Amino acid sequence: MKHAKQKTVDGADLRRRLRADTVSVPMASHEFWGDFRARTQFHPQYTQEPRTVFNTALRWGAAAACCLLLVAGAGVWNFLTPKALSRIKSFDVTVPHDAVMVLRDDDSNSTLLWIVGMDEAENGEHG
Image (spheres, one colour):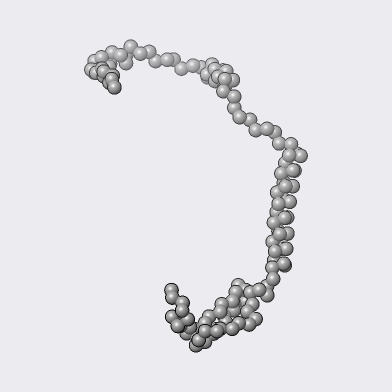
């Protein structure tokens, strides 16, 4: 790989080069904006297509229909879900145990069956 040879510039040479460069004179504002507008023709800007009343109404209608379907689905789900499945009607514990407790929370519609004093080692279950 070839490395480019760096050229060192001393302070006097740098000052001479800086003085030699001419500073451009600023344009008048009407010239600047005329040139700016002419250059924008080479770089077209994105323009959003105009919204029609039909297009906007169609979008709002579709959004409202989706919301209605969501609410209707939640209502149907609530009424068709059997609430009796979360209740314990009867149970049998066939292994030796000390006590059985049934805890029910009506607010959350949940039930917990707690079997106390059941020895897992005697029943052939090892954890």
